[in-house]
Image (cartoon, rainbow, N blue to C red):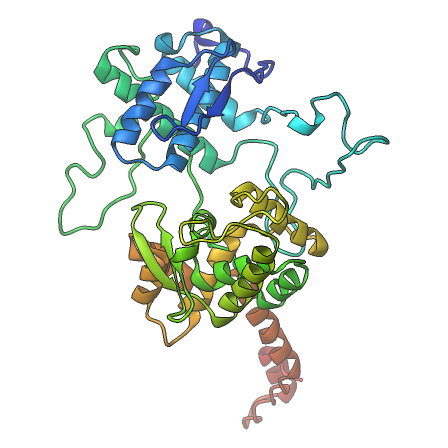
Length: 426
């Protein structure tokens, strides 16, 4: 029962789009969280510096800072300073993320006052209904509310943020995002019998349950259609490398021209988690498309050199290709099919193809994908949705073509009509 002093009107709460996350370009401080007045939020800056010292990646810093940005906006809406937040605020924030619609933010292209999809508008955006399942891919569009994975990450981020400031003495004396009541004694599986497997114990009190999903692959016929819809050699080379190496999008986009070894059919990438440089094999056609792209762009004056980026924009001035630009390219190919595949689905497709090949062991696939745990790689040995549907449809076809079962021979003393009724035979 919620007491009267703890009740808050979350249904009518309006969270304004105040403050922002600024990318600095400074490797010492890649991101800064700015408040509504444009000032740096110092508690967040100190924590991000601590995470950088713990060798967290730049992408991790950005993800955590985005969670803190949402928390700062929510605190501004309820009028509570960050260092005075209690478990009541933590509970209400978890409830708000679970039940409220995500704030609608105006795209920068429309901030001049011209709405999309009207006469005179420069941009026409095709949107699917929130949560609607795409008939081609079977993937649901982003819903109007926060996904369980987003809520779980936000809970973990904020709990770690306040744990850090409990040590520094600058935050509240109690973490607004406490551990689950069963975890008061300490860490998970603290008194586990070493002869028994680990149990999945709940961590945060307000941490949601995240369903375990089977990675989706792009079927071969749909991948061929996507590939045929590409216009430029660069885009064909990118897709060929992604789907044959299983590298993450950012790992391949960060490669330079001296990271490619066509004679050995290898490409070097810097792994996202460990930051280790690893050479991974690619398909022969990927290097063919790469050479066609390089010859084309070098003739147009693109920078050429061992330390130069491998992937450039196609328009002058030539700039390194970013993930945002690569995603826009892939989305244009998606529009031709009416699908909603993502670039990361190419990594899933590569992993699924390798895991299904009897000539590759599961540990080989684990090394190629740079998975720390073998259990993560084993997810790709599970039949996916397309495979199960195809197998089940084939089963029904076999049932249709199967000859009818013959009636059992009549036994002496039994009525044949009674036997037909009993066994259901004609």
